[in-house]
Image 1: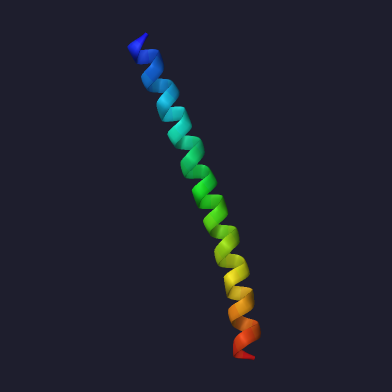
Image 2 (image 1 turned 135 degrees about the horizontal axis):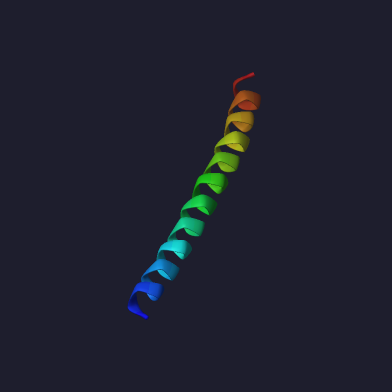
Length: 40
């Protein structure tokens, strides 16, 4: 039971990390576009 719960938590952490990476990439992408527009 404890091992199953541990793997479940690690899966939640993996999903959270993936959301953070994807969200950060999209945010950085839009930020770079805005910065390019501002620099122009």
